[in-house]
Image 1: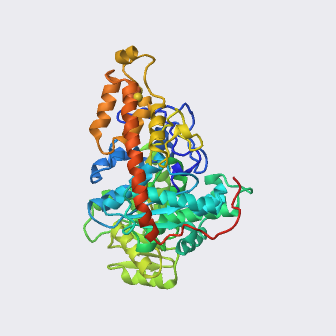
Image 2: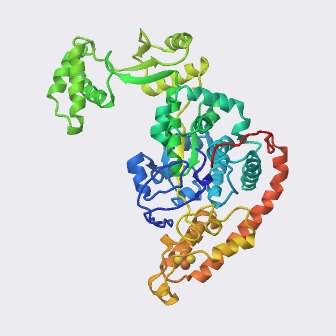
Image 3: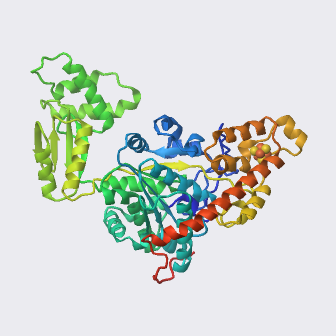
Length: 535
Ligand code: SF4
C-alpha cells in the first residue's frame, strides 16, 4: 500500500478523460491496469468506478469538514468506504490516516500530494501515521540498506517540513517495528498464496520475502487499530495500490471473531433472498393479530405468487425452496452471530452480553431484540474484551497521477519530467520554463482559440501544488487560458517563479526539521545486512 508515487514510474498521469476543474491529460494509453509494482497506467479513471467498484469522491464532498483543495479540485477523485472517516472527523470521534513510502529515490512533488493528505487528516484530529516501507524496498526493489537509510531521512525531512506533527503522530520503519511484524504473521495465517497469485500475479518465481512484504503492508494498513483499538482509518494512495487496499479490507474481516448477519429463520439466506423474505414477512404480518406468527410455509406460498423483478428470479426460487423446507417454523427477524475465531470464552462472553431473547446453537447465536448495527458494535466489543483486534475495514482515498513536465508519464527515472523536492530552486524554475504546455502553435491562434488547460502539465502544477489553497488563482489561470487571454510564456514564468519560491521555502524548512528528526526515535542508520531481492 505504499503510495503509487514511490514506484519507478511514480506519480504518473495517463488519464483519458477531461474534468471541468482539473487538468487530466490524455497519455494515449488505452488500457486500465492496476499493478502496485508496475508502472502506473490508468487510461480512464471512470473505469475504476465501473470495473473495480471505487466510488466517486465528489459524491461525499459535502460531508467532509473543510475539504482539502485536492478534494475540492477533484485531484482526489475516488474512495472506498470513506464515509466513516469523514463522519468521525466531523464529529470529533477517533479516526486515523496512514500511508507508506517506499524509499527508492528522492521525494518529489508526487509524494507531496500524499504528505499533504496525511497532514490534512492530522490537522482535523485524526491520528496520523507515516511509515517507511523499507522491507518492501529491499525485497521487491533490491535497494541496499545504505540506500534505504539515505532516502528514509530525506522522506522524513520533507514530511516534517510540510507540517507533519511528529509529537502527535507516529513515524516508523517496517524493519524496526516488531509489533507490526507480529501482526503481519497473524494476517499471513489467514491469507493464501493462491490469492496472491490471482491478485498480484505471484508465481513460483516470486521471492518469499516479496510475499512477506505484502502481508507486512496489510499489517501497516491495520496498524493504527492495533495501537489504539478499532477506529475508522483512511489510507491515501494512488489507484494502482487498490489491490492492496482490497486485500487488507478482506483480511480485516477474516480476522474477526464473529460474523454478524441478518436472518429470518434457522436457515441461511443471502442478501437478495433476505430482501424477498422480508417483503413476504412484512406483507403477511400486516394482516395478523399481534399474537399470531407467520410460518415459513405461508411465506413460501406468498413469495411463489410474488411478481419479483427479473434480477431477483434466482433469489426468489432459492428463497421459496428454503421457506418450503422450513415448513411450520416461524419467520422472525433476528441477527445471527457466527463464532469464527477466538477461544470458547469469547463465545460464552457473547452469549452473556446479548440482552433480550436469544437462542444458542452449535457455533452461532440468534438474537431477537438487537438491530444489526447494535449487534456489530457488540460483536466488536466482545472481541476486543476477549483478546481480539476487532478491526474495522480500512478505507481509502485515491488521487490522480501527475503528468510529466515533458508530457506523458511523470517518471523519477526521467529528471526533466518531474520536480524533486531536493531540486535546486533554479533547477525547478528551469524545468517549469521548459515544460510542455497545452498552448497553440502561435500566440495569435492562442488568442483566437484559447489554450488547452485540460491538456497542460503547467495548469496541473497550479491546481495540484502551486496555487496551494487559493482556488481563485486556479480558476483565473483556467479561465484566462481557455478564453485566450493568457499566453504560455507569461503563464510559465508565473508558475516557474512560484515553483522556485516553493522549493526555496521547502528546503529551508527541511533544514529546520533536521533538529526535530534528530529528536525522534527512528533509526536512520540501519545495521541490517543482505543483498535484498533482484532489481
Ligand atoms: Fe498551459 Fe498556461 Fe499555456 Fe494555458 S496558458 S496552455 S495553462 S501554460
